[in-house]
Image 1 (cartoon, helix red, strand yellow):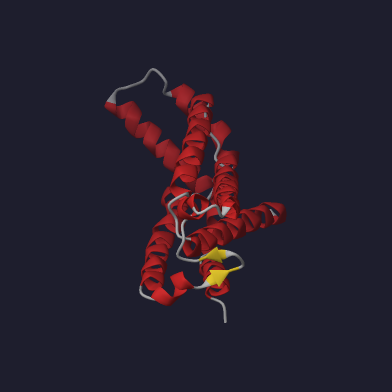
Image 2 (cartoon, one colour):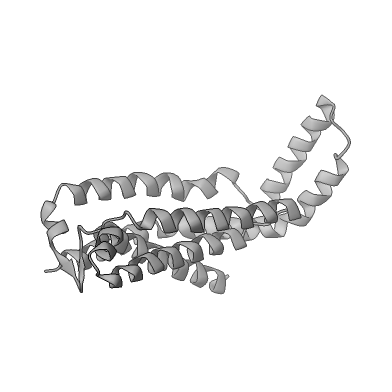
Length: 201
């Protein structure tokens, strides 16, 4: 009986559909952390060897390490590849039901963006921006914390997190409340599921 609540429930259902893939991704990331010391030793071993034979040996030994820890490098991208078509299909479905944007969830009109709401003096729309940034950053941070790497890679990861925070903060101002609610709920669910997966081990 409420479009806002329906949007959030569908968002959770989509995350539940992706749950098996998400579990596999988190497991792979944890395995990557265990693999990292051996990868570093491999990098040192071939640090000054740039000939073709050495590069081939390095590739072979890298594959052997992946097999040892049962890691498929492509599987970490699987959730993103599956999630994007679902997300765009969901957006298209929402856009085809104009009544959704005329409906309200609490005080939020589902078709109104935080920018328009704030311009109209409805400052509670700031809550949407804060929620979007908070849960998206937590979601990214959870994923990135599982990724092992060199100090240079860690530095790049931190830069990426800061960049994404700023980018998402700017983008969230233009999101209709219906999409914002979907975004908040799915990322909050992602944070919770990642925590549960790691706790379960």
